[in-house]
Image (cartoon, rainbow, N blue to C red; front, side, top):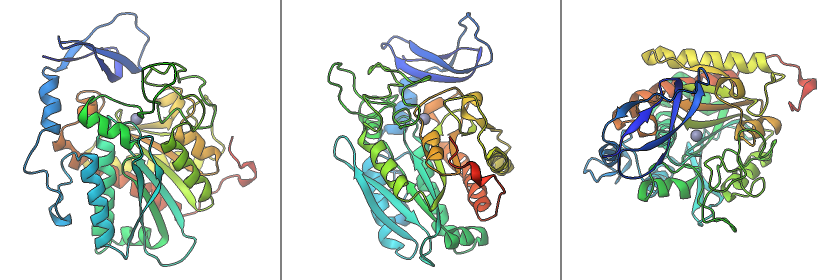
Length: 383
Ligand SMILES: [Zn+2]
């Protein structure tokens, strides 16, 4: 029997490696209240294998044939998600456009859905990506939820109608397609991409340490076997390179970059790589405050928010720092539910509440883009 154990000194935990099949799981503390030398632990999930199988096993309820049958409250395989994207694209030509921005290391297409009314050219845009880290399955579940909600509520929700009339949303449901598939077939706790290394047998690069901004400095590893391996050079991963290229091309229109991760219940903004305040702090801070307030209004779930470096940890080569440096004034990373009880194995029964509350937060951020926030433009670019 496999077990998850957690240190009581930590506020947020990571279950990284399953050592063997005899009840051992290695943990690293992601956000500690103190650097206590004492390692205390308690069991949160007594049968980890069973918990994993609950989410990957075959069920007749895993509906996927048509859009009306699609079950948004289960986790879906990459194949199911891609088929779903084709259906959505085909059935909503007025609001949806689907395209590929490149290919993954293993040659899989990197699909993006564009949402928005084709009311006028050069609309402001919001980028949302999910599934940068393979094991964070609630991410892709949220991106699908967002698309479904946007399309359905366009009919009756005046706020959503305004958003889709005035903005375009670029939604990438699975950023790290190779890693996501591997987390279904082989290793549920896989985080990185699946690229091969010349010298080591370890595979994969952390797709949130591979961006060309203070690349491979503090909070990233040079070692290919580490979970935070930055890669041989910036944008070495075709997935990162493809998204960076798209964002660079459309940076004049993209006003917000949102990356969905799990878990910690936090809303983070730049900087990740240093302890410093961003020039448009007031605007970003107030957007974050509005977002977590909207999120809280659904079920009373509390999110911490602030600069990634001080709120979570210092990390270099992250996507939010890169987006910010490239002129996207609002760059956010969400760390969705929970704070460590289930961690990456968030039960499917929590997909609905988690996505419902996150939807409110994302809508609040997008709505804020339609209003003006005064900031010192002469200090652009921000890094
Ligand atoms: Zn992540």
